[in-house]
Length: 53
Image (cartoon, rainbow, N blue to C red; front, side, top):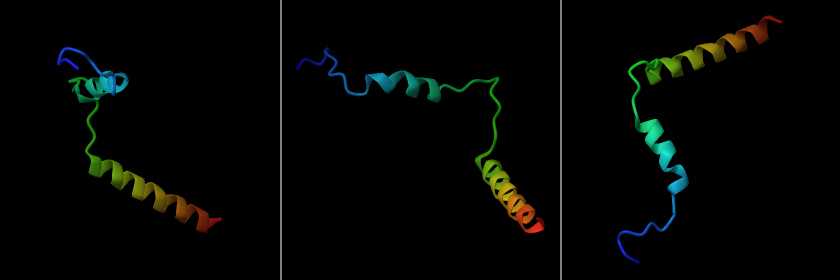
């Protein structure tokens, strides 16, 4: 196989990788720790509401 030929493989995901690697200056940036903290607090709130009823 010559180096100029493409063997297929992961060509279908190449666009997605390129899309997710690109950083948009207008995108909302949230720290991963903030997302985890929000999830934990939301879970605790749900547990407390279940005990209240």
